[in-house]
Image 1 (cartoon, rainbow, N blue to C red):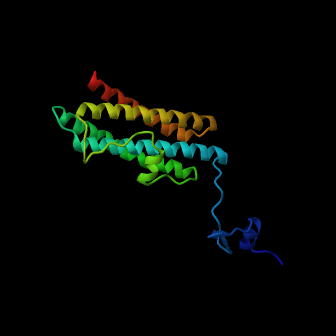
Image 2: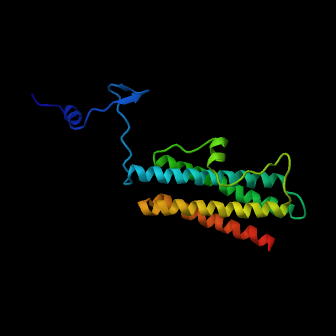
Image 3: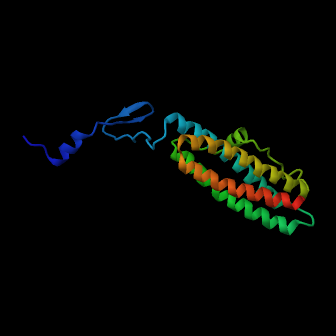
Length: 189
């Protein structure tokens, strides 16, 4: 007896099941394994580096926003506007970084506790004791440079693995953070 087109199609692909809590669910097609041309170990190492990069970026974003709210003194208006431009741009970038981690098959950190644990940038209190504008500018200069150092480390890993999308993302972020560090440093010279 001849097989129908539907039966031929089913016969040519392997039977798959989706697991739920460790149990197979017959008849439910499982998501395919990630096969984007990077080895699992490479994807994991890049995702771990991007998680630290995301954490540094989020901590810098939060610090920049904090300083935008709490800056005072003769430079108030200029810095209030500058900080707003920087934190707005940083906020948009956080999503791109997190989505790249997801595209590599890993979860992105998403809690304050995770960001604090992974970040190389110290938090700054806003409610109890805000520094003067010069110290804010100094800390943001140092913070942007810390993000650059983290980006360069991940970029080297991604480049070695041939992960061009991560390399491109990190290169773009380096350009932004190096420029921010330069502009902030110039205010103190």
